[in-house]
Length: 467
Image 1 (cartoon, one colour):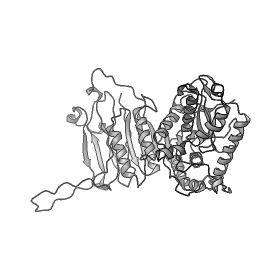
Image 2 (tube, helix red, strand yellow; image 1 turned 90 degrees about the horizontal axis):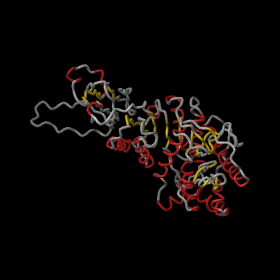
Image 3 (cartoon, rainbow, N blue to C red; image 1 turned 120 degrees about the vertical axis):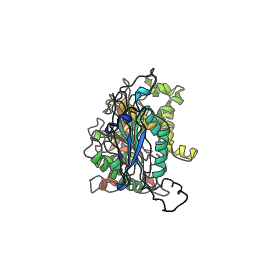
Image 4 (cartoon, rainbow, N blue to C red; image 1 turned 30 degrees about the vertical axis):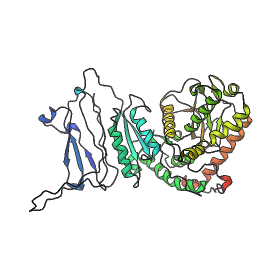
């Protein structure tokens, strides 16, 4: 079987890179060639670069390895009477980006290897793709660790004018890593180009809070980014696209994106709280003196801020209630809970920067939780739309709750958890904070008339630099 892919165009400038399918060449000489080599043909119009791989036999599979290029300009004419040829110029850094595909026949592989029946590639768009978190995450995705070892990946990486060169470096490293599942990498700075036909959108990029900046100002600044990205998803992504927002304040940024993408299913918008869940599992395991894999049924309720509620009431250790195993209620309430709420800030003090590697791991865990059936009796945490929730939480906000998935990307909210007075009070506090955040950005979500009450130090619950 042969996997063929539609042509992919550069996302930057008006220059277009055209990918010519191997089948378009009919030369007998070319069809008898071994592994296909790239033949470069240069188009004079619009300074386009055309890459036409030689034809290969239809038996086997088509593997696509990608490479970021700057494009090519018109050939410089040599002076009429020049004794010495001019040295070739280095590729200009201002030329547009593109995609290069290399095709080969599986017939040239070892006889001991058999061709796999690949699934159709899943298109994964990632914003903030040149950042530290993405630098850890993209290689997990390309390796098959996230979406599965039989799932080909087409990566679409979104950067900015400022990060263009770094984005090219990321693409080069992905190319050099020779991931068999990585069929395509496309990079650009226009979300409408990068998000085209996306199955998944991992929105990592956001502006960090500057010194002295209030959370209301951060919401306004990043809100404009997620309005644009939400509209782009609405216009060009698949209607079934699953969106996971990481850039802070992630709950309300996810709300903004969701309200600006009415064509997408509201249930498919998530804000990342899996890192908080992982931190909670680790601390419970350390206190109980057990390995963390014995800890299950951990829920993070509410906002990804210091009002979040790590739920030890319903958590289990080796199948038993965590509170019974630890047998230290004071520690759970006065040490464990604030430790999870402020863990990110402590890491910044120790490390000098916000978490990157552990955030990437948690994004991978969050995706795997949606593409892998949840273990019987267990659940995971993610902040999702509260419409129709069974816990009486105000509708129309993005709130972290316990979820269960069948592995098809969808989920259901787990019902019937015990909400005692201690949990109820703190869940209400986090809900109040999120409704205030929603009011602050009402002009960005089409709900005019809200007033922002997140002014002053007393309303500031998100630690500076926290991701």
